[in-house]
Amino acid sequence: MTPIVNLEGKVGLITGIANEKSISTGVAEACAQAGAKLIITYQNEKTRAFIEPVIQRLGVTDVFLLDVTQPETLDAAFAEIDARYGKLDFVLHSMAFAKRDDLHGRVVDTSADGFALAMDVSTHSFVRLAKKAEPLFEKAGGGALVTMTYLGSEKVIPNYGVMGLCKAALEAATRYLAAELGAKNIRVNAVSPGPLMTRAASGIAGFDGLMATAVERSPMHALVTPEDIGALTAFLVSDAGRLISGGVHFVDAGYNIMA
Image: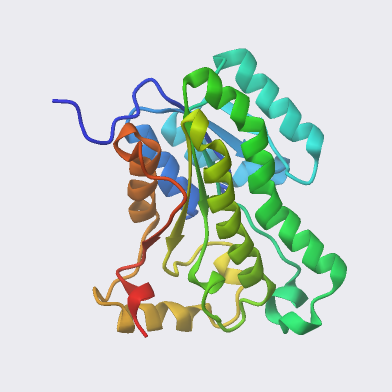
């Protein structure tokens, strides 16, 4: 009997792995276990050293430089994917950045250049990935895009600052891309995990308190793990999720429903 989540024969691009504890690592592991052929990207040579254990453990042979602030690396990565596979079945977008002062400070004090940089890396990069992936999805007969968001998009989270605005825009982009690409059988979704300690989260002041509150107040009294996020994402990009598009899907032990 074929498993419900089956990615055999599918080629997927995974961005945003920083180390073993990254959300993207959990997604890569789940997709690999479901049979997908993975392509992993890294931002620069320094970051590649941190993700090498993941690459080796999963047996990934296609590892490409991709820095969304350097358009030529995006062009080169997708040209190589096209040359090697002639298609793409799914893409994970998991990247965000804001200057420390803009992340920790008041939104009203955000600098114009800091705001532009945060939106460019955290939100418009998703649009750029979608644009590059679209023709490769068409060659596959359809595809799936998934991005990572957070509850700070719709609720005010202390010390989340300008990133809350970026995530709100990212979720809006998810809906618009889903509407624009749906006719080509391309699905677009956002996954919204509860708080978990990643390298990115470590830069948010008071994050330990956010995790403690999530355990205390969520109906299931549990913290999400990269494996939990990976399981949901693998489902969304598989044929089992073939008619799911345009949504923000929470995996947070129910925390988002609490007043």
